[in-house]
Image: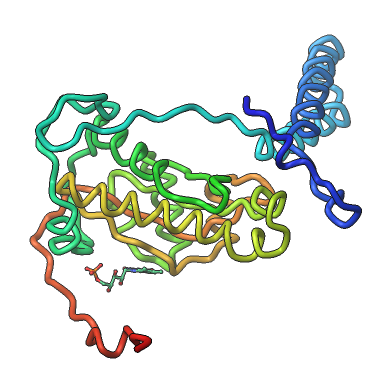
Length: 268
Ligand SMILES: Cc1cc2nc3c(=O)[nH]c(=O)nc-3n(C[C@H](O)[C@H](O)[C@H](O)COP(=O)(O)O)c2cc1C
């Protein structure tokens, strides 16, 4: 675990936020108490609904607290074109796709072959999203990975009946954790940076999937509450975007774009 002293609230006004150290201490105490109550429940037998409810509540709070505990690790650098170096997880030195080629050829194809995403491709996508930039490197997001058919069905329902979501063998749901960014940046962290952190990670995953020859369709139209229920996301975690990923069943059409001159204004 990293030292979170730089994140310690300093002024009066910021002491409302929980520091990483405080979260760690509380989480440890809570885990101990939860384990004690679970033992008690076993001894008491099944006739203790109040105790079971208490344990459930402690587990819920424990999950919330864990969102504030920083656990970082160094990440290896990928080899440059043609040079030896550390390899990506699951990478066996294959050829690297040119980033512009990937950007130019990416298409949102909404029908998928009934073929799973290979574990090494899944890992490469996850590794890529983790490398996305984030405000203060707080990485104020979480990702829910779904392959289960029944849950994919519920996600499709939550996405206003977009059935192709259920047909995608792999679905990643990107969620913001506003309180994690708020710890450092206050309201701007909660209202903006955590959303940006989550969606940049989503964009990285989308490009990584495209580089692997997969289609990854960004799905933003969904009922966040239905989504939260389908995924049992912890309180304080906000689902923002989904990627429905799989092997495309068709080539996909290039969609048009606005004129650069309509999108970009140069300050002379
Ligand atoms: C924020 C956002 C929300 C989107 N929501 C949906 C969606 O709910 N359903 C869908 O089929 N596509 C959705 N898309 C995909 C866009 O429709 C698609 O990217 C766009 O039409 C351009 O096509 P392309 O991705 O093939 O270039 C979304 C994309 C973004 C960035």
